[in-house]
Length: 456
Ligand code: GLN
Image 1 (cartoon, rainbow, N blue to C red):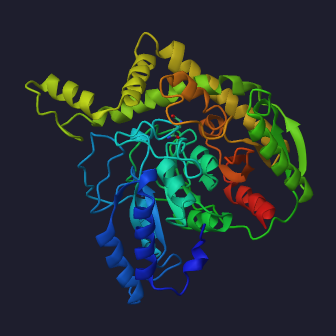
Image 2: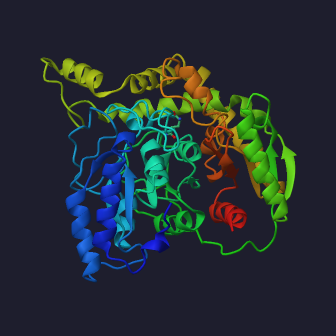
Image 3: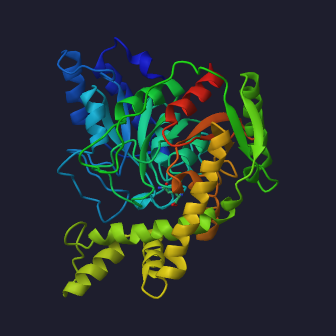
């Protein structure tokens, strides 16, 4: 995979043309939903003319298709937004463009980012970069595959419960899910507002760090953003104390995954870090909490897609209620509908206390357990997912099986913690395995520095 520094001093037009060519060459993986050739080449010419400068001048990237971009469509991989062209750009895109970066296209995802395989896209799945009979992971599957295939050195993704980390792990690239509030979500299609984060997928740690440095910071258009705390760390001042989450290393976890994660832990030890086993008993409730809180927020956030305010209106609708009903039926994918139903149910007056409120209380207990561990440990480690990339179609008939596969990524999301996915190696069958580092809030740069030490 190329790194951002490889592009220094080269013609931006030549770089962008090459990226577009690679995108076409790898079309069969279906990583991308659209290419924005015209705008990309125009911006490349501005760079070459010296009119556009910055730390990413002429560097091509791809954005998950739930980031609003000018001129190209923003579909969220749904029929609802199939023809939607945004009137504004996401702050994240604006920040990258201000540094001279060039968005060449939009990546495939599970519709509205609901899923973990990119098979819920209304436009068909993305295939894994290492084995095209397997899933890309998701929901930022297209972004991960575009980086793994070396179409671009980095891509933007969103992570609500693992959607950057898990596809990064499945395709052997770095994935950064920052502390909740690090990057503005303005202009990004909302999934679950209390866990939605924006982050980066990249071929190496240095590039991920540079892009995070550019993306992070306060935005008056997103009240949840934090003042800019992200400062790249060249080298750690002292070895760290890292806890291995024992619940993530049981016999239920794929042996190849455990082997690679254990190998990575050995490398951390060789770097001088202290490694100890830790336990998070509340983990057994994490999925139950996530699959109550997140659908609740989804059902509320998706209310705006009604064929009037947003989304394609059904042509068959004759009454107002048919406008809502038929438009939403045609616009949403089955997984979107499932979550709207679960969310509406757990928020309904009869069940609010029993489900939603209870889940929020349990969430606080999980957060407390994490905080307690961070009194002693600088970071926690474990796999990103219990298995490597599974076969296309293997889990589609069983939504609960799909949800269970999120067990390792949802805890950090519920607690708003930074978590990164770093390639640990390949299984005997040649599939990438990612290791996950989770830290206390705002320790994002430390996590990247730990990973940098291993790859150096
Ligand atoms: N796989 C998880 C889910 O389906 C995570 C999705 C995400 O982070 N967008 O909810």
